[in-house]
Image: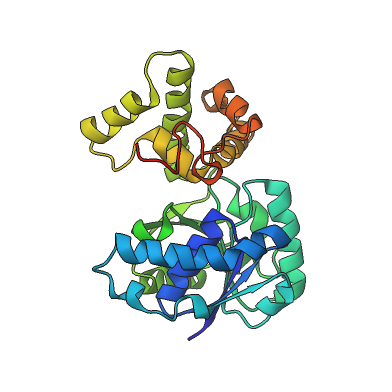
Length: 285
């Protein structure tokens, strides 16, 4: 089975890694942070156990070899033989640009390069690649193993062949690709971040508690999760970063970040990964 290189072993990177490994791919998971890498192996085994219990009807999660197909590294040179590379670093255009410059030196013209981003322009990042036509947005949604939809984002230079390769890869993961054009926030996050941001304003203004807001979405609209539980799952820091990108790129005041979100991030209350966001984690609620 071909190799998938994954850049960034944070929440999304690990989820994408176990999803690919569960579908039979060999994975090279890269991060430059020694602390993150040191925790990655244990985190991966925990994720596999969690998804095995969450989706017991899916035979892929019963495969005991999933963690063994994931190689963890701090050397991007190990991507040299990868057929596909998925970039998952923080939602900061400058950081992503630096990664893609380095990736160009390591991988040259070979692989399909997928950018797993919420809002950053695919066209902008593709300009740094050896072959801009081989770059496509591949927006996985959290939690990756459980969400069927993958938003494929076609940049200005993305070729028809790249779109077909990306669609085939997404299909092989048991997911359904939806192809859209490049625009800040694409479709999913241009809509979802308005929900999350406005919900935070409602909490700030004391119109309703987080539980009440989320119940209106789950009970009233039939959503699986409300906007504030979703924000906690994504990470409030990532939500703030994404809103900043949307505000700067679209110059539209409706994307002005709620001050409460910024205050929570400054306080280290970033959601599930910190144990505290709009909800408290590690205890039943």
